[in-house]
Length: 106
View 1 (cartoon, rainbow, N blue to C red):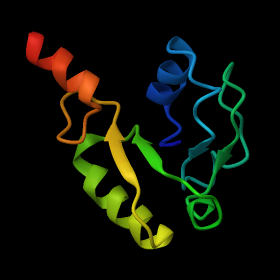
View 2: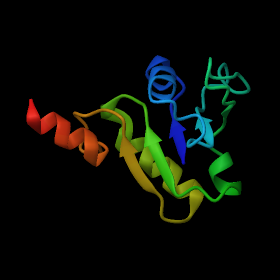
View 3: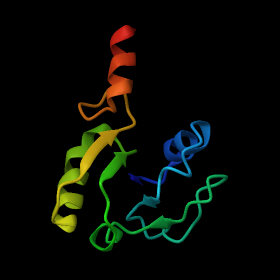
View 4: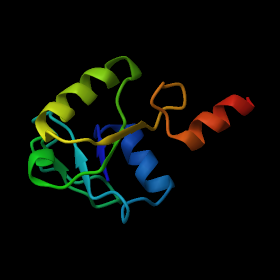
C-alpha cells in the first residue's frame, strides 16, 4: 500500500489512524518533498517512479479530488499493471468504501 500526496492531510491521516505500519511508501513528485520524512510516521517521501520497481497493489490518494483521475492515469501508465485506487476524501468518487458509507449517514 502506498499513499500519493505528502501534504498535511497525509500526515494527519497516517498519524491519527496509526497506519505507518500498513503503508509502505509515501509518494509525491514535488522535488522539494522527496527524501523528506513524514513527521511521527517516519515514512520517507519518494518519486512516483518507485511504482515501477515495487509491487504496489493499492494506492491511497491524498490529493485534490479534481486531479485524482489524472494521478490515477499517470501511476497506471508508469506501473503497467492493475492497481486499486482509493481516495481518503469521503466526497471523492474513489473514496474508500468505509468513507462512502460514513458520508451517506450524514
